[in-house]
Image (cartoon, rainbow, N blue to C red):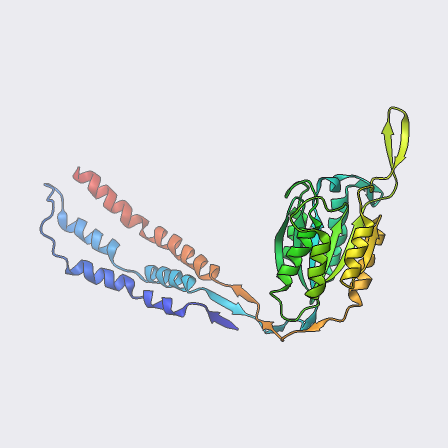
Amino acid sequence: MFSIAWPWLFILLPLPLIFRRAQQQQKVTGHLQLPGVNQTAIEQVKQQSSRPSLLLWLIWICLVSAVTRPLWVGEPIELPSKGRDLMMAVDLSGSMQIQDMVIDGKPVDRLVLIKHVLSDFIERRQGDRLGLILFADHAYLQAPLTQDRRSVAQFLREAEIGLVGKQTAIGEAIALGVKRFEQVDESNRILILLTDGSNNSGSVTPQQAAEIAAKRGVTIYSVGVGAEVMERRSIFGTERVNPSMDLDEAELTKLAEMTGGRYFRARNSEELEQIYQAIDQLEPISREQFSYRPQADLFYYPLALALLFSMISVVINLPVMQQITRRKKGAL
C-alpha cells in the first residue's frame, strides 16, 4: 500500500505565499530612471515574468512531495522463528597463504578455499544468525550475530591475509566469541574455529578460553585446514613435504571435546564441507516471531515531475526573458 514517511512536511506548501506576501509589504524607497526608455513597458514585462504560474506551483508541490518521502509498503513477511546462532572465527595468519589446496583443479591458498566453502555454507544458513571473527595477532569482531547473510558473506570476501597480523591468537578468538554470545539470552552458541596452525599469540591461552566457553555453554567446532602432502621444487629436484607441520590437531581436538563439539580435518574442500552435516543435525532454537514489510522509495517520481515542469517553464518563459534582456540592452 501507499504510505508517506514524513507527512508533516506538507506544511511547507504555503511557504511561497508567505514569502511573496512579505515582499509585497516592503516599501520601495526609490528606483533608477533611465532617460529615453519606456519604463512602463519594462514594468509590465517584469510583472508578467514574476507572476506565479500554475507550472511554478506544480514544481513546488512536486518538490515538497518528494521531501515527504512517499513509500510503497508491501505485505508483511514473517521471519523464521527457529534457527541457530553461529559465530565463525577465521584465521588470517601468514601461513594461510600457502597454496596447498585445490579448487576445480587449480591450486589456491588456504584462505581462498575457506572463502569458497564458507560462502556456500553462509548461503545455506536461512533462519540462522551468523557472526564473523577474524584473528591473527589478535582477534577482531568483523560482524556481530545477524540474519543478514549477504553482509557476512561480503565481510568474509573482503578479508585479506595480514589484515590483522601474521601470528595466530586462537585463545583470543574463542574468548571473543564467548563474549559476544553473552549478549544473547537463548542460543545454541556455536563457535566454528577455522585455523591452520597453533596458538602463538594473544593474552589468553586456548585452554583458558575453552574452559570459559564450556562454562558459558558455547560449543566449539574446530577445523584444521591444510594438506598433508605438498610437492616443492628445490635445487635437488622435487620433494614431498608436509605443509601442515604447524597444525596442532591434538590441541584443536581437545578444545572441541572440552565444549562438547567436534574436530574436523580439512585437507580439501570435500572434508571442509562435512561440517554442514554436523551443524544441520543440531536442534534449532525457537525465537520470538518477527515480521517486516518491505519498503520501496517513490520520491524519484515527484522529483522527475518537478524536473519536467521546470524544463517546460523555462521554454514558456524564454521569450519573456529575451524581451527583458533586449529592453535592458536598448536602455544602455
